[in-house]
Length: 332
Ligand SMILES: Cc1cc2nc3c(=O)[nH]c(=O)nc-3n(C[C@H](O)[C@H](O)[C@H](O)COP(=O)(O)O)c2cc1C
Image 1: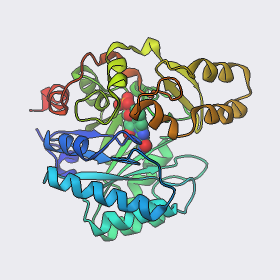
Image 2: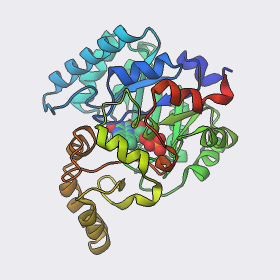
Image 3: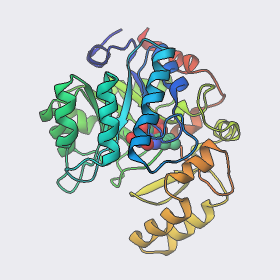
């Protein structure tokens, strides 16, 4: 089966692996693309240590892009983190230069999606258009206004993200089941859906609601090719959504499987005013560094384990191909 999203991205099956900070690398991305989907290199792809140098950040991404090319000749993508305004960060612009130089066919752009900042910022839009790079846009705050702006700008795919997702969650608590038809009715452009999609049933539901592709993160954590720590993969396999702690954190909300810092995160959420709770929890979590600690290094004392509500549907550690084959069973 093919559809508009498969055609525009040059992929066999309508499944996209979402970027996950620290938790993607060339092996994972190439495995997804080789299985017929679209793999995407996320922030800090293939890394174990942080760098604060924008040039080194971009060169690390170049090395990871080259590794992907050694493992697959299929299309793949790279993430460009949007800003909360009109101006892209120096890190993002350096990575965009590498994307252009290395002729990466697809980028995933995070739009901001609120306070009047909708769609793709100019600093990213114009170079992508000029070089024919396909733009998948996933807003951190999905909204009708944001989706319409992306359509008007000529983005290739819009991703509607429901509140079931893993990672940094939107401030507006609209579940996947409700946001997909809402955005579907607002735009005509190709639409993918993220949040809670971890098995063939949830893929069917997404398509029934009007999506043309699924965009998955959590299900690609507990796979053999993922750089996620082995103890975290095992924790994911034995957990359900009932095990998740839920709390305010920058930018808005977060979930974590139980780690030693979770009681403090929940307590701050319950006892502090909203903004104070976010700031306090940002410190306890150590920013995105906490994801590296908890999920990449498997330190369940000091880090956190961010997954979506679909965690209940993951029962074993499988290969990427087994996961894609199961989720795409109706599209073969
Ligand atoms: C551990 C983790 C880290 C993530 N990091 C990022 C990120 O750096 N940038 C981004 O755009 N999305 C990030 N996401 C969101 C995913 O790309 C994807 O949209 C989301 O996981 C989809 O929901 P699901 O987890 O229910 O499949 C992350 C998700 C997870 C689980």
